[in-house]
Length: 195
Image (cartoon, rainbow, N blue to C red; front, side):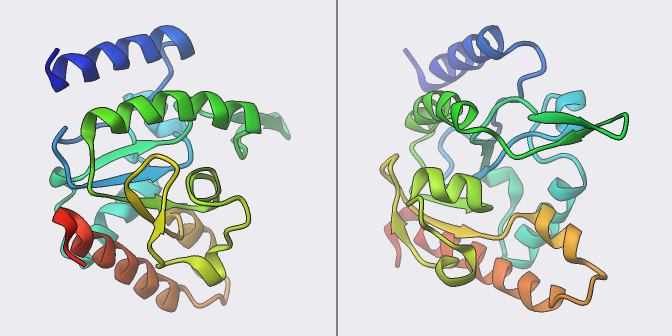
């Protein structure tokens, strides 16, 4: 079975398992770099694609600053459905629960087994703790290459949604922007086994 057929079969099985609102990864199946986020948001569910909302648009700019063409990167999430909760009569995103992460890992393991990236860039604490180590903290461990539980080396960095949340709050947005760009550039350098 070709990689494309395996990927398509997995995408269909994932939709059957999690429902039509599940969001599967996208990108070249021979990508050297795979970016793994936490879970899709409202816009991702509406469009059926990962990282197309405001955080995705910010990710595109971060990638560009790091010298990375998004079209050459495989982009996915650890959880394939949008975790939500009702708050004040509105539906809001919430962090994924442990069971949702475990279910997502089942799919992600197979998904990245088809893509076989050289390196993973993990956006946010959820994928970093699930794929590197539970005690990981972005403040001290971001930008470090670790062994991942899925095989390829991985580094963790801040999620673009976090940058959106702190913009204009007095936090050091510009410093964090530079750190994320540096982290993504480091991941790019590891593609093809280069150090």
